[in-house]
Length: 288
Image (tube, rainbow, N blue to C red; front, side, top):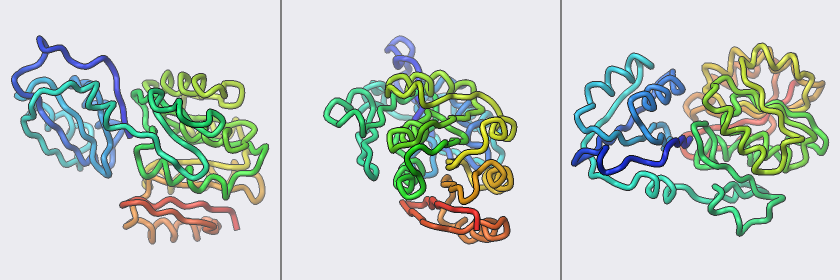
């Protein structure tokens, strides 16, 4: 995940040192991200299982700890003073173009070298999904095995809409990008327009449990969400899919694989393909 807003801090706003913050967010990642932005973070980057940011005031360590634990009591926080940097340039330099299966995922300033029809251009905003995270890449790598030309797709927890855009660039007729976080909607809509797929991707703001039945039936479901949210959604996914429809699930730690396989088997799902990168497991499934 990468999130960014604003143009960085001026020298007048900064102290001699900034505060470097690393958080393992626990069960409430989105709430922790929101708390960091409320504290004044100009950007939040997800590195493996950590949220990383800089704050302008090095004396805020106690405030950060209190705010993060209030948002997610099982979070773990590390803070330390850090030299002042140009955050915008540092943030940009940390982003790369990624070849992911048949597609290239790139920020706008790195996209010109790639074929537009096979490039997903994502301007990192305050939304999950830039191609920098293994869970996003895992879903895109499995998409060609689950997707057929002309399919209808629902993308749950769509964030930046990266997976919906990837799906239509790989042949889907239409994708519904469903996202609960209102702060992510503008970024998702901008990315859809930037990729020239506004007629084929619909961004919907709201709860997936309410919106998914309205767009069903669909041929493929995508859900890059933590496993504690995925498991309760499995019956809803099953009812929203056409017969023999596919789903691709990610946001699952490798150590959670066995538990997830048990839940899938109990729900009548069959595993078709798996993808592993770093600590993350992604799985393509079909109703058996």
